[in-house]
Length: 562
Image 1 (tube, one colour):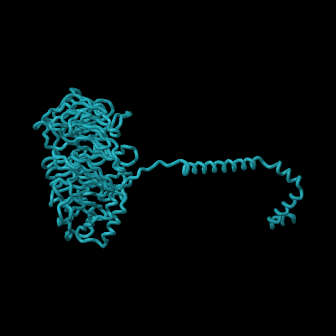
Image 2: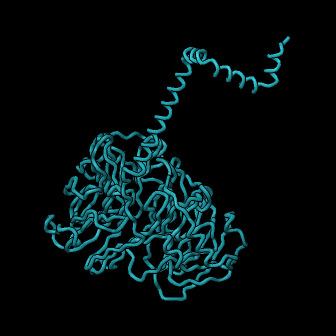
């Protein structure tokens, strides 16, 4: 049993501790013995505490130095709008973007013809061995429009392709390839404008150079994709193979055995044989006399005519466009004819859905009408009969149809991905549009069940190009961002900074290449145009006010392509 002292200690533990502390104060020698006999673990704990606080102090010191002492890199201020003018010049229908100066803002590349360069650079046509006027290539900053580099590149330019891949493991910079007239084949450094290589082309003086410049799988073994240039002389189309890294011609000219009425597209199958109307393997054998690195695809070979070696066509009328659906090599192909268009399986060349009758003269654009679902916007007809069809690429169903009259020769359309996994679409149409009553059930457009909904928009003002913005979450509304009365040569909508700063680039200039005039390169930030934009309602408007609609467009956020 517990004695009296133990029982009291158990009942009143605090009093017991107080009693012990008083006893220890009254006996200092005993206290010193306890300190001397303290276990080493307690001294180790004190060392650990000291090390912890020292580490914490060092961390705080590093944070302070990084935050307040080391200066942060200057982020370039991106202007919302800039404009560059060239007098007595001609602009080309070419526009490319890339981060040339490494400031993480997309920069702009374009071509123009003039007697002399801009005031910032002293190179002239004569300095490069050309007669005046000649073609200049220019790169300007996407942040403020300042010239990054500018130089004469050719007497005249027939084709240009930028960001051509270089050999694996090579330190060679990205390049722009230009096929010039009368007989030049040149590559320039994308970042400095300096010449990488320059050769005379082997094209006949009477041959027309066909678009586009195609990249083919590596055939000379240097690890870089090579180039295929197509030319037409009378009714014969020929192919010329060139090394993508040196520009030297591979073999001789080879006839494709096709006429020039078809579009051209390089398409890669699972076994890596490439076809462009006919087998590139067969073309390589013609120009070099050897089989090359290509493999035969028996299935595709069976679809080529044994005599003409031409691919079977699924198009009604002349082929206007052949487009790869965004995805990996061997993906589907969108075939756009003069009378119909259809999506073909990339491996079987069989239609995925019933061909759609249409009169398509302009290149379609891809985007997302519904979240994460790829769609294609097709311009059906021209002038006052022009309609914009949104089709689900998976089923071919019409998601929406807008009647949007346009002027002849208007700019191409564009799209930008938005943060809600859809896309914002940009179309050019007549300046003044009015609305009439809608003829389809309410809600069909937003649900996207394949119904065909039509809207009629009538011209009521002067004939000027206007830029309209459309987003699938507001299917009854167009937003008129800007209107332009000058001749538009090229247009594109660009995400200048990752996930932010959407803007459009406009190239304007003379319609006649033989009559030089004022050439302008213009950038406008899309968000800054929304507050002063005009809301065009399609059919019966919803309850939202015009300002509420502008606010919704202003709140749109954009995202970079995956």
